[in-house]
Image (cartoon, chains in turn purple, red):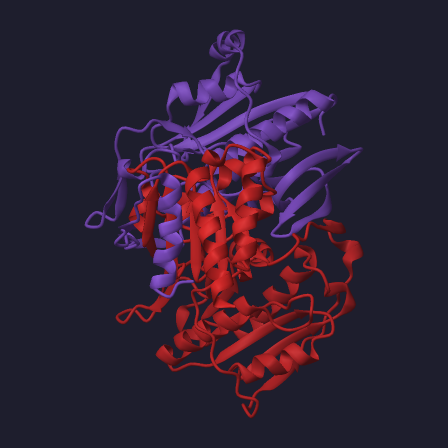
Length: 268
Length: 338
């Protein structure tokens, strides 16, 4: 462990804004992909929660935060905004082959673990509980596996107590408290809280931060060779129904008519 | 790496409720695992890890498991990856199943990736469909991607092939009390002292009334509800219908509703007989958790809201007015029936 405070690595994935209207996502069945238009890239929301957790730990006990992102085309403004919330370093692993079909959870975890292993120091590695595009929720645990460190999933709260990390792990009807040693990987859930907004002055500071750029080859990772799953098809879910619009002279009456329509059709 | 030919059969990771019976989701994935085993002409088995497992062991045999592997030890009563991973890893190493199916539960979501990475094999999480590819006889695992905008199907050449499955995907089979099947007791060295992670305690936030996942009617509100007071009105409607109140993500993030009430890809998947969506627009991540509901009602002041495209009944208007009228008429109709 380092002398003062923790060295925290936060893995951030760039995704098309999942809050964008569903009309901006098109399923391209022939080419087995989802095409997006007119929506900006963002940091995957759970990764933002992971960064917020890191910022709070840094505030409480000092330390350094390194952002790590891998992908094909990583947007400067997206990473700059994340850096400006209070992170210290940025490592990008950029490679044309690291796209949706060229990687899977295992190869991504291998790549990120190799990048983390190359860093001078790491005590705590944070990832989002799952990415907004693949929704797989595997990479965090995979990174820990490759690094040979323990992992705790679905954190709603993270505290440091001496040389231990105390995590509230989110459950469907509450939470469980789990303790782990450092170094440790924790996957973070949205219960941690939203990522803060950067101060204007911080954006200037973030622009000065040198970016470390590594490639899969430099890291000695055969991304294709690590891949174990193949995306073989993609289709649009057929969920649309015929909606009967219920009306009334007033909105209140429309509500009354809704109850009657449900009774008429035997729903109630 | 072993070749796929050496792996055979379908293994289901079974989970028990606090009452000591196997969970509904376990019964569902036993049904689903049985269908896959039938398609392949192979055997169905189950892995049961916990404490005091005689009754659930018998239940799993009745549900079609030719063999139930049981790891029964007081130390295993709560899910702990440090103890569960070695048990499953050794079992899979010995039994060599072709497919391993988990529920998409807190334990399944944690355990399955750990095993997959350790064994160098493939896992598809949050599946809404499992099938056998007719040509390759490999598992085809289908799951929502991009928050439910698309359904991606995944296949792997590595074995065993693993998947976690959502609730309400598999069909329960009628238990057969006369079914033949053996229970194999696994020798366990469950010593938590050596594990890196320590489970300190579990804190329940059990909601009052009907559980969201089991409710026949769910009344959900979105950001448009405006605050916690609004959710009290939805409580009244849910109470009249014997249902539960849910929410999209914003009300939970804003603290109007406990996060245990969230419906969607990162909350709960529900499929009640009737789902009433009030003042929520229908983000894909929310839709992904409720579109299997029997009938869907949408109330929203925006006629172009996505929620209307998945609804059977819709009212365009201010939610408080519409729900006010709805509640009043409902009271009348329900008293008529009695």
